[in-house]
Image (cartoon, rainbow, N blue to C red):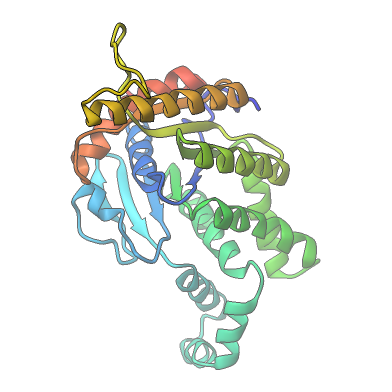
Length: 308
């Protein structure tokens, strides 16, 4: 699989970051958003109900309102159901009618049961952040901290499925517009993994499904939380019986990292960035440190700028 054309991430309107649960996807999304915000106005959009991204920047929770976190970068949390309700309100416009409809159990069943509706509404929300109503742009780029890979694929397939299933009407028009946006060069995808056997296998499978679904490969890959590189001439090796158990663990885990990085490299080619496991607790210091390492890695991998 090849990467997208040069500068694809640095000119994208939407960057979807996904990966298997537990690989550090949200932290990587935050670091990537910080890098992209060096050149443009960026919104980091979080959809996880637990709303944890604010802790990475040491700021209060968004609660549905944009929170400035750095120059050119804001954090925004939203929930799919909330987005559906806002779309319905904007279409009906009559307050009492909106309240009556949204209080109905039938409405609840429809929103919760309609295949792909909440996913479609969420992507339209991201679309409107960039494109805006009547051409009014609110941000230059949305970095979407999407759900884990399985749910992310469902999210990204929703517009296309809805466009195929619904022939006409406002939902059909909305689905077609969002589906076209996802397939265009203005959207890029970043896959995050650990350099371990199961996460790499699942990530490669997700990448193949993504390319089949949208007809284009991931723009970049990030191997996260790598153990330190073994220095040349170091005498220990996995299975050597080294009495220092910490060193033995380090050697074993780094050997796994190297093996899986090689496997990723054979499959990915260009577009692979590697981030180290750092002795820094969760918070802004960690995100900034990873951003400093991610910027040159992405510049080398996909030809984009790495900041001013």
